[in-house]
Image 1 (cartoon, rainbow, N blue to C red):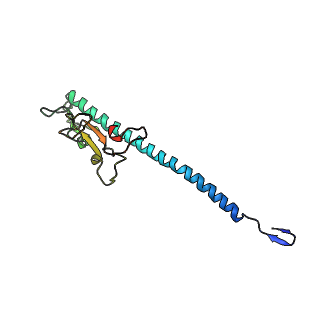
Image 2 (image 1 turned 135 degrees about the vertical axis):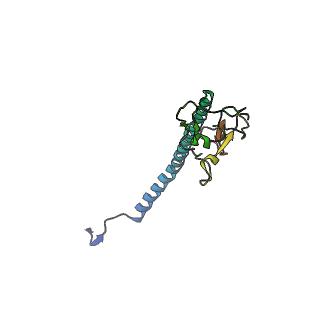
Image 3 (image 1 turned 90 degrees about the vertical axis):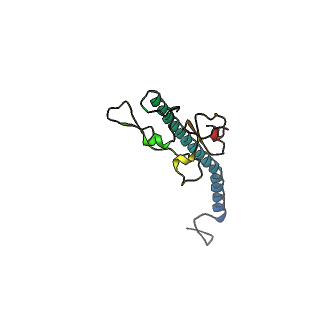
Length: 163
């Protein structure tokens, strides 16, 4: 405290200084919010890419194992699994003397953009059978490919359904 002309002054900030500081902080927070949302979206897109790669690699490995004679093929089948759960549950290796099982996935990854968190991981994907065309995927007797069900568009301008 200092004494000037007999008046006692308190050390501290004035109301104007506090208001200016709070206004500057609000402007900075407003500018940072879109960057945070963009970063969160990028992270979800990265999760989606990894999940698609994991499932598609497992489908390819299943098909390769069938072509190599390690998996019993269904009559008139094309070598792809009936559902994703079959990749997790595994199938018997016909070339193994101990009747070992071949597993292709530890778990089914979730689509990070699927809105219902209570849905099973397998229900978060759209399925394309071997017989369906690429531009109009539909389910069938097997799972040839998976795609996200989200109607949104990615940061790259392509709809997630086309990833």
